[in-house]
Length: 213
Image (cartoon, rainbow, N blue to C red):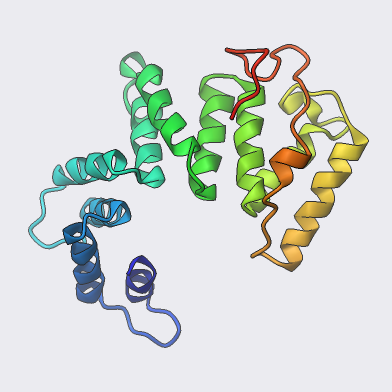
C-alpha cells in the first residue's frame, strides 16, 4: 500500500497523480495500525495534503508511528530533539533513545540518519561507522562510501581510523558492485569483516571494550 500510494503521489509509470487515492491508502494503513501508515499520514499532514487537517496533528501521528516501531518516525523524532529545537532546548539524551531504537532495525535510510547522529552530535566515531556498516550491508552506497573513506590514506581523519589499504579496497570494490547492481546486499558483511578497534575510542566511545550489537 505504501509503494502504491507513492506511485499515486508522484504520478509514475503512466499512472496520473491522484492524492485522493494516496490518502485513501494511507488511511487504510492507519486503520490497520501499520507503523508506516502513521508515518505516511503524518508527513502528508505536514505537507498540507490532508484537507482540513491541523498541522499540529502530524506530531501525534509521528509519535504513534515511532511507538509502533517505525524507524523513519523514530529518526524524525530524534532529529527534532537533537537538531530542530533551539540550541538551549535540544535534548540529545532523548534523541539518542529514538536513534538507538531506529538503529536496531533493518532500514538503510534510517541507519544513515543514526550514523550521522552519532558522528556529529555525539562524536562517537566507532559507533557511527558501525551503523554505516549496517546500512552498507543492506546495500546503501552512501554508507559504503563512508566506510571506504574511513580507511583511505589521507581521508581517514574523518573518523580517526588508521589507513588500511585492504579495508579501503574491500569497500571500494563493494561500492562498485552496488553501482552495477543496486539491489545487491551483503548480509555477512558485519560478521566477516567486523570493524577494527578505533585508536582512541575503542569499539564505542561510551563502552570502549564492548563491540556494538
